[in-house]
Picture 1: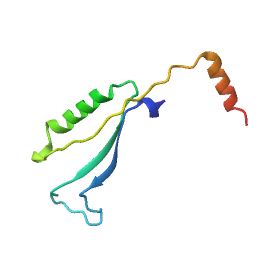
Picture 2: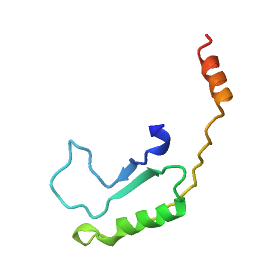
Picture 3: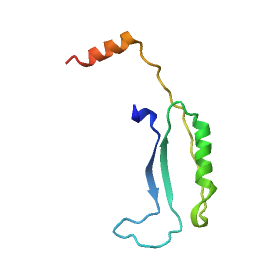
Picture 4: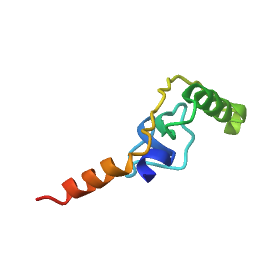
Length: 96
């Protein structure tokens, strides 16, 4: 259930950072980060996307310029199974 309903943010790509063996305490001219945000299936994806953009853009550190592109997709939530179906699925899962 947690994988479906719990929101998550994952960094899925990053450009502009040196490898750890070459990294130093310096300012970089540009860093690009691609993130994936998983939303609970009943949350309005368009409203969530607008709020995420607002949060990321409202107070960037050190005068950084923020650009944002992305799209959202609405999730889905299946209704609860009827008792008979749930019992049948549970029984079938035990058959080897």
